[in-house]
Length: 364
Image (cartoon, rainbow, N blue to C red; front, side):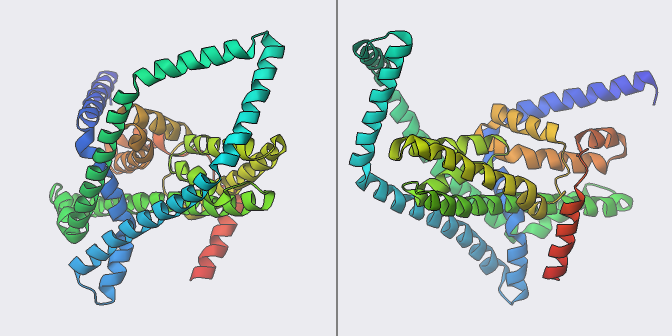
């Protein structure tokens, strides 16, 4: 390829990328539910196939998969609601400890900066007053957001039904886009995309379950109050790569400061660090493996760009989207350099390979 042709090719790629970002942004209300539906459908595809092999009809198997999603989410909400009710009973005690902590902070501020407690209270009241001016607007936005979330969830379930029910039709659609000589390559790409999307979400969910269990046991051992409530709330943000672990750590630290003594902070941090170390170095490599094969740099790019374009949903969906782009580029001759740029350059440790071999032998 000559220099002029290369520049022209790069220009077309840049224009296509810009147009794709514009479409993703302005069509986000339509595309986000479809994105989650596709991801969940690929995750539950083995379940649907297993049910059908057992003699269950396609429609019944699809409805059972959707019911599994609903029951799982309902159980998570039920556990959090039950623990929240327990927390509300202990609120008077927590409120008293919170007041003690506020008093200690006021004394520290007065000693360090010479600001009297009365002036501190006045400043806080002014900030509360400013915040209360937008309270009605915030409440309205929250209500609209909740209704929108319910509507989006219903759309996700509806899309899932049709994606699982008529999955062969969509598979054949992609094959018909290409000539017969390229269809074998397309089949391989579609199989890789299905495996990547399904295993990505399965890995994330398994990590959340592991972190929840580890936090619940660890926080209970060190004596952190409401450990069973803190654990799932701290683990759920892990669905977002990298950033989720930091966001999820805020609630346990606050509970350690409010419901316990300052000496509770160090054990709480230790539990979270150990859990994250095990998850990052053992759980994720074994469960997710190298299926994504995405560079750490572009993983961060995916999270950041996803937040800019689709918000929190983009932070979850853009990592598998980038992995899909890598797969597509790897199967298109002219796009091989972009696949090389996106793929993971960090070699998998030998001990992870050995564990995988042991795991595969144990399950075979």
